[in-house]
Every structure is written in structure tokens, then in C-alpha cells.
Image 1 (tube, rainbow, N blue to C red):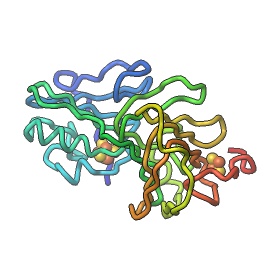
Image 2 (tube, rainbow, N blue to C red):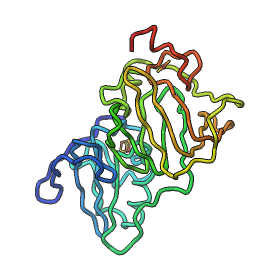
Image 3 (cartoon, helix red, strand yellow):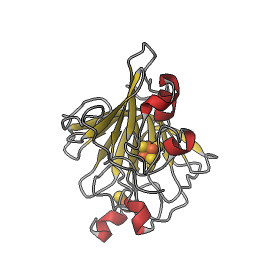
Length: 242
Ligand code: SF4
Ligand code: FES
């Protein structure tokens, strides 16, 4: 997919100020771009967009790479725009309804999908923390790096495409994910310094073929790209000096 035009029309699409920690749906320090439609405002983060193209494929008249601005939220009903925005797997897109329609709600179950040759797609009540434990991002959709190359750890920045990261995204039945009964509904994702991504909270983990789904509340997932037991950490990061 071609580059998405980063249009900054200050009349109708003002760029917001960098967000502080904990602003729902917005990464700490990120700048999101706003696009106003009839009854809905779409925000887009260039930093979190990895050109997965779910938006372009599902609503090309609104999401058109190469057009300026590349998002024109006036070209479809607010409900349709909001529906497609919620398909963005990385959380780069968000929508806020101003027509009384219901804004996106998190699903009742947190899910982690291991994608083929790509990141983890997490959907649910998600809290991404930095390696000090501070909350960095609260969102319903995030993409988390597992190739080791992202410059925006632990979030995916699309580096797997340039590096040629290869992994089938298989999840084998029988792996232990901790007690599925978790004390709270939120799924926390926190990177260990120079180590794996630690997940805590109730979630399902599915392989890219979606045939194997495990249920649990704790896992240490590889984010260096080197584990021989992907998606889990096997300690390779220690030998490779991640
Ligand atoms: S669906 Fe999200 S990640 Fe994919 S191109 Fe659209 S905005 Fe970017
Ligand atoms: S983070 Fe990759 S093996 Fe531990």
C-alpha cells in the first residue's frame, strides 16, 4: 500500500497537541490528526499506523491513500465511518460520535492474535505500560512488536516489513497461560527491560490460523524476534543482547 498522506488542514483537520499519559486511545506524547465528518470525528496516529489497510479496503471513499486529506469523513454516514474505524487493528484510528450514536465499546473478552510475519493484535480493555510500570496507553486496540525491530517499543511501528521478519504465528495447544480466573478485566501489557512482553489479565491467545485458542491470565511473549518457541519467550534475548 502506498504512503498515507499526512494532511494538516488547519481549518477542518487541526492537529492536536501531544497527549498526556492515559488519554484514552492516544499514546503518550503522540500527535493525532483529526478529520471531521457529519456526526463523527476521526483521529489518526501516523506513529501507530502500519498500513494494515483494513480501513482502505472496507471504506475506500473515506480512506484514500494519496488523496489530500487522505481521510474524508464526510463521505459516508457517521455509523459506517465509526464501524470501519473500529476495524483498524493497531488503534491508529479512532472515532468520536457527535450525533448521539454509540462510541466504540471494548469487547467482553480480551483477545491476543499472533499474526503471520507480524505483530500481536490485541483487542479488549488494554493497558500498555512502559518498562517502569507507568501507564502509557489505554485503548481497545493495539499492535505490539514481536520482531524486535520497532523503534516505538512495545508498540509495532511496521519494522517487521522492512526487516523481513518471518514467523507463521502458530500457537500450539497445551501451552500454559496461567490461571484463567483473573481478578480484573483489564489486560496489562508491560515490556521487561531488554526482555519479553509480560501480559497480565484475562485473555485468549490465538494463532494466525485461529485454529488454536488458549485461555489464561499470564504470559511472557517474545518481543526480540529470536525465540525458538514463538510466540513465547525462551530466554534467547539474553544470549542475543536484545
Ligand atoms: S486500518 Fe489502521 S493501521 Fe491499517 S492503514 Fe488504516 S489506519 Fe493504518
Ligand atoms: S524476548 Fe525474545 S526470547 Fe525472550
